[in-house]
Length: 233
Image (cartoon, rainbow, N blue to C red):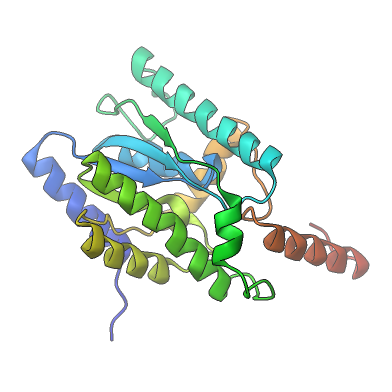
């Protein structure tokens, strides 16, 4: 079975959007500002873009609020660029549109209930699959209720995330909720590299773990092991 090139699938849909004209409404689930930076810069040229912020996996409320504030700060900066037509050094141009944000409730208790029994799974294992499903299901539901034309997620920009699994979940939920899924592999074509450049440009907070206490503990353990072996972060 041949692998699906999800990046090309994105381009096919965007080509169709260009031919039809207009700007379909896209609900983009975002995990954080750094990951969404390239995705928003790219997608706002073709879609009426709304960020959907639903991340109950972030265990600590203080961490959650800080990441949310960084998302809002970046969106405000992108919207300022549209108002002032200030696209110097950006991959977006005059066709870029303003971005909105839709905040979902912060419900870590439900997340912990969903991953109960999977606490000892390694990062990238079954617990992560349950986490993806939970967040994308809420995004699909919000997209259906809000009358959006598409939904997708920024999670595919991470080299550490299972892109095929994320797209499989998205397509399944698309059939369930009746909203088209925008397939993606945002890290391709230097997307991940661009997200790092934009994070530096806007001085965004770049966390070194996905958000949950389990991944934080694993990250800290890896740091200790590198330090003990004489390595560097």
